[in-house]
Length: 399
Image (cartoon, rainbow, N blue to C red):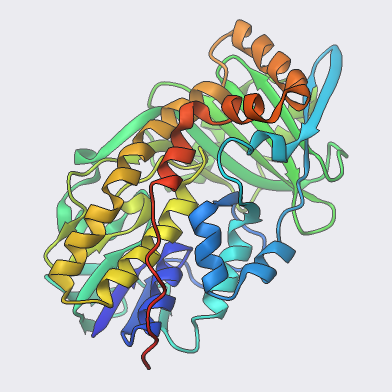
């Protein structure tokens, strides 16, 4: 059996690993020119079942060693004393098992453990689909038994197999921006956080000495623009932020212009009644998920890829895809609640919520464990989503 997977970030390589373990031949195409290794992208969280998947792949020790070590977060407020707390307190209500790691580091590890057994084709996308027969941008035609879109929110596979993105995308009322800059704040190993009505920003250290990464979340109405034009996106971010986050963030924004790794996207969810059609299926943000940067998306994608591989190991593709969708139905329903809930908690709507965020941040470390977990559970969304996903046994290995 031959699987063609689009996407080589997290879900794609996890699926490739387990399909190879179950005797499949796997081809992975990826739009990027090379493997997304290094400390690129933003920090992602592995919770609960995703940690279990990483452990079953034999990568847990390496992932723990490579974790971000962003162990404290400091909320800066102009004219007032900053407030510092442990980041573990903020994750207490989501999962008992939690590892934060840079997306590029994780993707690099996943590529490393699969590259000898998987046919990776970087700088390549699927241009046409006819069932499981795909015409690639490099001119090759691949006759597969299964095609999987693990290619994110703006999935090309979804567009080819299910139709335009507009049918399925639900904008959640905010945008995300990330880029790398020198450590202009001098905050060392702590995460620096800033809030204002409609805005939240964090600046945190990377694995490279002297470099930091800035992440902005901005509430706004949807802004039509060319999502491939970085210069336009940078101007949009500047206009949205202005001077509302104070002089420290103004210094961060001074480094926006030359940022070569700038990433800007809407925070949206894909909502589909079914994410499989014939021999084509979707994994992660391509078909479902809470939305970028709101927590749990990477974990859901990794665990779902494992579940899909396990189902494909037990029988024909059509039945496996039905069981995969049934297994994910509950977690996907929960995932749709997370984005609005988390955005409501971490991006204040008004000055009163800015004040309340500071008070909760101050009090959180002093609260009893149950109260702390309740306050950081975001209404139970991430916990309910992840707890509702039961991983099947790894199964037998076939060469």
